[in-house]
Amino acid sequence: MLIGIDSDDHVCVDESLEELENLCKTLDIEVLDWVVQKRKKPDSKYYLGKGKIEKLRNLKELMKADLIVADGELNPIQARNIEDITGMKVLDRTQIILEIFAHHATSEEGKIQVEMAQLEYKLPRIVGKGEELSRLGGGIGTRGPGEQLLEQERRRIKDRISVLRKKLEEIKVERDVQRRRRLKSGIPHISIAGYTNAGKSTLLKVLTDTDVLIADKLFATLEPTTRRLKLPNGRVILISDTVGFIRKLPHSIVAAFHATLEEITFSDLILILVDVSDVHMENKLKACYDVLREIKADSIKKILVFNKVDMCTRDRIEKLSLEYPDAVFISALKREGLNTLVKRLERELFSGEEKRKFIIPISKVGIVYSYRENLEIIDEKYNSDIVEMILKGKKEVLDTVESKVKGP
Image (cartoon, rainbow, N blue to C red; front, side, top):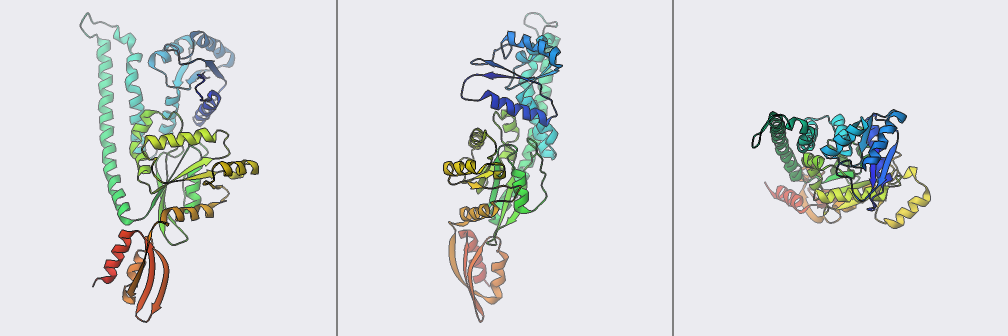
């Protein structure tokens, strides 16, 4: 049973519950029904009104339900009260997302990040779970054994979070070294960002012609996957898939996955991938921009890429083309529009680069070709023992080539 609140704050409760149902399906949880109550804010004790929760108890027998999932974050008191009245297990949206992340984490870093997010979520909720213990023993001004047990549990979790944070810091140091090496190489880095299940992994696979995990599931990708892509102009770029965004992304997730999300902030360009077949695409696009703003990546150059056009009518595509004239329309699955996207990548990445003329001894032409991934050869003319070349690239790369061809 899903429960939600219609607070009339311009957030469509049906859309949010539909998304929560899809999250549940990712965990093979069968959703039997939704229960929605119109109210300005959640009840502090029961999330919904007490009467509404009591009706859920009747639905338990009628529909054979054994789980309630709230479309929001429950405090310990709300969760316990709902459980006491209905006799059903109670979870909230954050716990569902954390469980999905736990199922899909494969790398050491991913598993550490998920565990840390779970512990960060659990820590402030220990007091609610142990109120009964707190009543054991203890007089005025003293702490009973129940309180001592709670304090021990809190300390254990804090210590574990500290250990995990240290491990993540060690991984971050290693990533920083790799990033500096990449930046020094001058190879542009592009991140594919977007709402979960928008087709990011499929796009990475078809662009780079490499094996990447593709699954029609929410949050199938947690760890960034980076591949090389050689463009028609001969230049090479690095392109990365990233963890999917979602509305109401738990702060514990954002905090734990900060190092992973931080990679986006070092991109030269971000492709914001949107599933245009989704009737809620505008709200999901807004959620993407919200997350990019939260991780301070909103100032990076972006290309809006509308995916899954093969699942849309021509009228819808024409309407969106007028609303979003700068967007690129593709179908990653059908490999449609990819040439247009690649040309746009070349234009956005390299249009502002410098062109410079070189006169190079034939014996040193190999130096230029050793930088071929970082340069575009606009023109070349061979004259006996010299070659005249017009090269295009970043100033620092051109300076390096110039110093080497002029050197001994």
